[in-house]
Length: 306
Image (cartoon, rainbow, N blue to C red):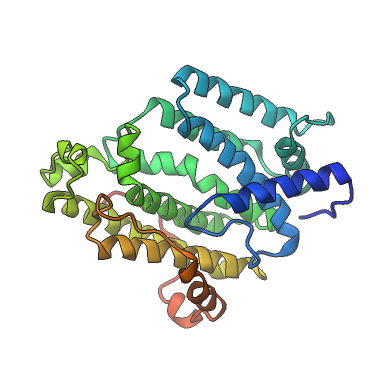
């Protein structure tokens, strides 16, 4: 799984990735102290790669063609970093060592990059299935890579991890509804908007109408179902990783509850997980009620459109 990091250049590269991981706000922990220490550098390298690529797609004022060029270059550097040559970028120096040490499949990284490209070219989703396909590539690979770093290669664990990662991605969509709309993107399926008779123009007016609240309740219910399907992975892994995954699951479900508590009106207030939330979430992760949380647990079923 993990190797000792003795080379000063490699140690500095991993340290740079960890600094990047700590500097960004997320609804879930990234290489936190709940994670086994040998895993943290590898997870940080994975995060640094994905966070930087995501920023290419989302941040700044670059034209689409420039963003796509940057992602193409990022992919070329990804494939080059697993060879014997020494990358000139600390992220890829660390990532290459991680890929080799943990035997990570490059196809999962390629899936991530395909989703980041899609953010540049696709701004609307007609159906729930098309949203899930995006999540399959934008979120699910991260969970599978973390499992591989931990030494797990199991189809049932992969299935429940996929459901959890999809739920986290969906929750972030609903939390960032206003921000995404300002950037010209909408992840709420057009099918659901039409079914409830909601008016997209209300998003320009920053109005969370009753019809839009019904739309958000529809997608939130499916998100809750995805969290339920993802619960088994929290107890299916070994050692301290289970605490990290429990903390992740608890943080995601709390955010979804907070969105419901404000009737999904992110125009008035965008809920988030803050410092005050951390102690109770950590305690619940450490003293997880196994019998209650495992109730109904089994092999995770795929999350499908109802």
